[in-house]
Image (cartoon, rainbow, N blue to C red; front, side, top):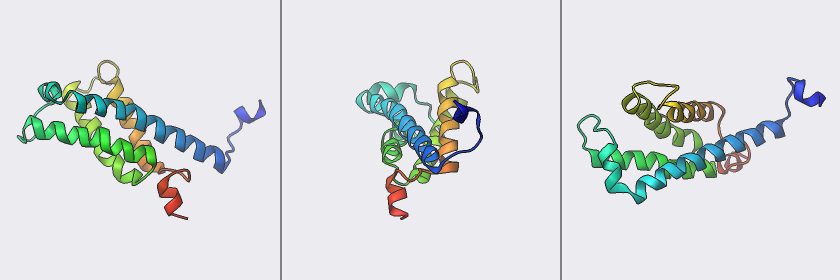
Amino acid sequence: MKKLFTSKYTPGAVNAGMLFLRVGMGILIFHHGFQKITHFNETTHYIPNLLGMGKTINTSLIIFAEFFCSLFLILGLFTRLACIPLIIAMSVALYKSTDLDFFGKGEAPSLFLVGFIVLILIGPGKVSVDGMIGK
């Protein structure tokens, strides 16, 4: 019980927390990407057309971020690099789709955005492919 009220931490607890955050965020966003892949034609109708690139290209970029980058995130491979497209995708979702409504329709993109920013700042942790390569 005393451990709950202390500000001290152990490296194992920090690495477990980083693993839990990384895998949890990766699995949650992977589900969104998988839904977009399986329903690609329907997805192109509601993805906004940014910079005049066309809805198909924008949908493909969102799928790359949400599906493939989330796989890298789950594995802990190129974690910080994989977070960049996810941060961009969540920023676009928050800005274009919800008009910066952080507490209404934009709550999910806001939470994902905060999680990915935390991951880009703290990194993957030791329990990851990046951590194993760094040894």
